[in-house]
Image 1: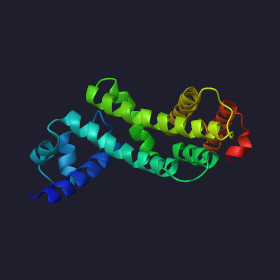
Image 2: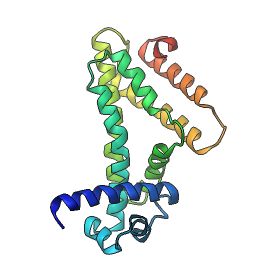
Image 3: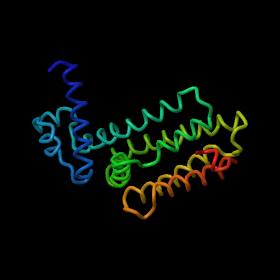
Image 4: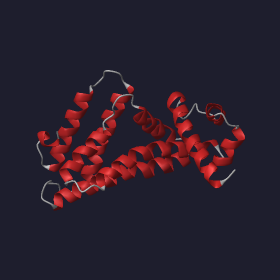
Amino acid sequence: MTRRAAEIRLDALLRTACDVIAQRGLANTRTADVAQAAGVSQALVFYHFATKERLLAQAFAYAVEQDLARLDAVTRSNAPPLTKLRRILRLYTPAGRPTSWSMWIDGWSESLRTPELEKVSRKLDLRWRQDLATVISDGVREGIFDCADPAGAAWRISAVMDGLAVQLAVHDRVISRRQFTDWVRLVTARELGLEPAQLE
């Protein structure tokens, strides 16, 4: 197998693994399930990943990197901090079939038992907080936000979004997407000295 063919196959395996995990959950996904869904041998899966734990951790990272790529596009843009903040809040809101959020929730849960997954989960989770804190710091520096502790504000805003997103993704009709959006805007506005309407 050429190096390019191996890379293409690895990408396809990761995409397939994400689909299988979304259906079965991290705890119930076996390497045999991924191999069967991809139409390859289980030996090829082990060639790329060596262990089931590594497969799950890399598939989780692959799925989450799609979200982080969208976040990077926002934070690297030339938009002003308030526009970036609005876009980040929209990115965080579960929409449609919450596959991405299901993966995050499942990843957090399995991280309690799988050290390799915990390491990946922690790294990716911290990226969200750091990027949000950077946008807040930029807004404070430009006089748009009033916040003495951008890093703490990023953690508090993220904690509220995480908690509400879990309810929205896991429990049907406990809260609405509209409530999620309104409450996140309210908390964010209070943290940054804004009016909620400025975040619409």
